[in-house]
Amino acid sequence: MPDLSKYTKSLSEHFFNADNIVLISHINPDGDAIGAQLALYHFLKSKGKNACMISPNNLQEFLKWMEGSDLIHVFIRQRDKCKSLIEKAGLIVMLDFNQPDRLGEMETLVTGSGTTKIIIDHHLNPKGFADMEISDPTFCSTAELVHELITAIDGKPFYSKPYCEAIYVGIITDTGNFEHGPYTSRTFRIVADLLDTGIEKARILNLVYNNFSENRLRLQGFALNERMVVLPEYQTAYIWLTKADLTDYNYVKGDTEGFVNLPLSIKGIVFSAFFVEKDGFVKLSFRSTGKFPSNEFASEYFSGGGHINASGGECRDSLENSISYFLKVLKENFSRLNGNK
Ligand code: 5GP
Ligand code: MN
Image (cartoon, rainbow, N blue to C red):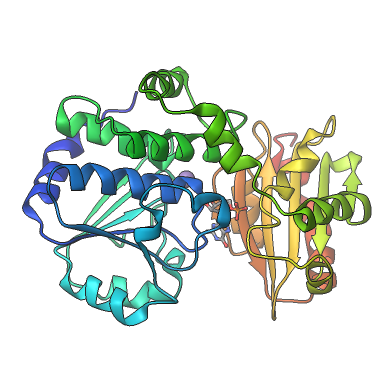
């Protein structure tokens, strides 16, 4: 396990000396961002601290059952309230991101604040915009890292029901229920301890994974049937959706979550890309298996980044041109990135 002792003392001092601790998750928060945010919130509240939570934008439905999620202020809906919380903050803790643009419309407000800022995260390449950065990509999830930090600070694990559920949700959603990412035997030991506290695994899995609309499932069927292209010679497959496709299926935010993973279940496919047409640009998600560095592909060609096996980027062009450009750079660089040259 990575050595966290270098952070423990200072982190503990920050937590216990600060009044008004503001916990911030990233834009389009996923289960790990919200899980880590809620877990730290429940821990700090149990210690009598005055803490509050902000998300740059709305939470997806599959996270709204989590205890405390209704207390998360949504910046784009409550700008004045969030501004005042940040202005009054004695400490800002950012969870599950290490690049300022992940703050969305809150970016300048947060980066411009003179308050001490801490990042707790597990992505690569931190941008260095906080006073303290605990950013370790060997953790499968920020939730796992938060749990280890709290255990180190307190000298023992903290177990309350909402806390345990939040850590569990962070771990399962960032590993695809233990399918990908750097989870370890240590992760399973943490999860075993969480389950021993009595949290209801089947109920939580049902709330997280069986919460889709009929439209979403039909959109997935359409995407696989009509919009997936497989390139066996490059061990790659991609899926593309237009704005009109999304409208046809009454798209709501989060509906395409996970689509990018689907082509990886085809035998021999090691790299998957997912294109979604937006206003004036195309958003891309990448996934890979094994050593194919999807994040290098994203950063070299699509102004993006992320983890080796899960990354994303964008292309400021039409969908058609974005796909052509993708095919061009894929063909030119697949062998090199896949370690064959
Ligand atoms: P997703 O495909 O789930 O949206 O993103 C997967 C991961 O890729 C995220 O956790 C994040 O690390 C990274 N990522 C996605 N989009 C971008 C982007 O536009 N820029 C950067 N730097 N990273 C991204
Ligand atoms: Mn995460």
